[in-house]
Length: 245
Image (cartoon, rainbow, N blue to C red; front, side, top):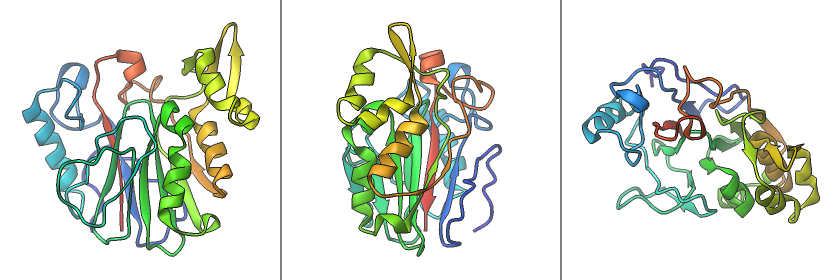
């Protein structure tokens, strides 16, 4: 398949097998206006439905099939999507071994995390906000890959950066009371904390046995010209991160 024609897409910088294709969109391109400007791919964030359909048609043109969208709920459920069809499954990760089947997640500060095996026969997309990470969505997705963890590689897509993501003690405790090692992903700021989603994901991957990890180089909050950010803007669009065989 030809390279995506969408402007501004980010392709993972990881040594994935040639059979694995993936990219993240940015807000560049598309036809949405106002706070959703321009390439909003989220259908549940207040944008005009017709504009979302046009934006999704641009995405579809760069893919081998229609993405299998999820009903994301910030949990740890994983959907196997080898057999597409039916309403969007309520899940925050999707796994497939079927060539041409596109796994997709939508984000606007939460971390989009991609997985593939080194044999190039299985892929997954994970929506990993702090709630999903605390619930174990990364570990659940690794298990659903049904591969030896050390045969997997992961890429961390655009998410809110550690200097912009301020959280309360409840978030700190949700991780550190489970495993003290997660404290390394937090920096105290008075009675609050700055949380590093990328580091939380790396620690979750490590606990699941995955050591090959790439990415984690962006901040959706501060890079307003490139990314949507819910925490920055409240009303905003969504980017898509997609992967397929």
